[in-house]
Image (cartoon, rainbow, N blue to C red; front, side, top):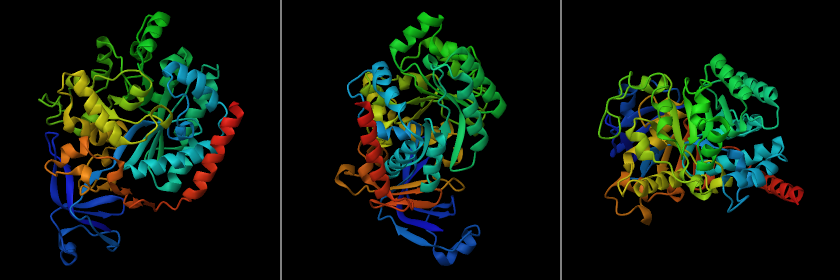
Length: 467
C-alpha cells in the first residue's frame, strides 16, 4: 500500500470537465483504493477495504499535482535507434530513402535495447502505457515486461515484398501469444493502405474476426497519399479499407490529417455503437452523459500525432472538426525518428495550439485535449481501467512539480498542465502500483548503463553498414 498525501489531484466530472482538488490517493497492489479526503492510519481499517499488503510508504506530495499516466496511443518505440534519420525529408522520401533501408538491417536485439531506451524516456515524461507498432514484437514485449511498463502491440503487416502469408502468419502467432491482461498484449493491425495488397487486407479482416480484435493502421497522413490512392483504386484510403470491412470492430487510425468529408462516416457510424449507447450532444462535442459501453463496444479512434505531422510537413489534423462531428480522438508521439521526442506533454500542447490556428484562435480547449491524452486515450488503447484517478482504476499515477517557475502563477492548474508543463516537471511515475521513476532515478531493475552502451553500439553498426 502506498499513500500520496498533501496533494492536488486532477479529476474529471461527468460533463468531461477537468478540475483539481486537494486530498490523497491510496494504492494497494495495482489498483487505486482511495481518492479523496485524508484518512489516518488508525482510521483506515474502518474506512477502506481490506488491503492486500501493509502500508509500505507515505509520500508527501508537498501540494504538487497528481495526474493519470499519459497513454501514448501511437508510437514505434524501437525507432529511438533511428532518431534523427532523414532529417528534413517529407514522409514518402523519409520512409523509402532512409527508414525502410535502415530497418531492413535491424536485428531482434536492436529492437530490444532500443525499446528499453524508449521506455526510459516514456517513464521520465509521465507516460505509463504505449500502443506500439513495430516488427520483432517479442523483443519489445521482453523489454516492456522487464521494465514493468505496459504496452499494447499492434500488427505492422505490409506485403510490398510479396510475403503476404508470412506476414499474416506471424501476426497470428503474436495474437495467440500475447492476450489481454498482461504487461504486453497484442491487437490486429497493418502498416498502411499503400503498403497493403487486397490479399493482405482480406487476411487482416479474417484475423480481426477470428480473434475479435480491433484493427489499427496509418491513414491519410499526407495529401499525396490520398491522391495516389484515388488514382490507383478510385477510392480514398478510408474507402478502400472500409470496403474490406476493417472499420467494423473499431480500433485506431493514426494521423488522419487529410480525411475527406465523405470519410468521416466510417468513424461515426461503423463503430458499432455510436449514438446508441448513451452519448448525448453537448457544447463540448458530445461528451455529456456518455456511457462506458459506447467506448467498450467498438468504435474507431483517430489518433493524432501533431509534432510528427509537422516535422514531416504532412499538415495538421482538424481536431475540432472531428470532435464536433462526434468522432473520438486520442494522442500519440509517433516514433522518435519522425518526432525526435517521445513527450506526451509536447503532443498535448502542440495539439491545442494547432487547433487554435486551424479554427480562428478558438481550438479544442484544455478539457478535450486532456481527454485525448488520458480518458479517450485509455479507451483507444483498450485499457479503460486506466482512464482516470478513481477508486478501482489501475494505479498508473504521475506526480508533477507545480512549484517550479514554469508552473507559476498557480491560478489554473488545468491550463498550466496543458500550456506550461513539460517532462521536466515529472517527479514520479507509477505503473500498476509500482514506482518506476522518481526524482531522476529509475526503479525498474533494468541496467540502463548497459542499455545505453548496447544502444550506441547498434547505432554505430547501422551507420557503418549504411556507408
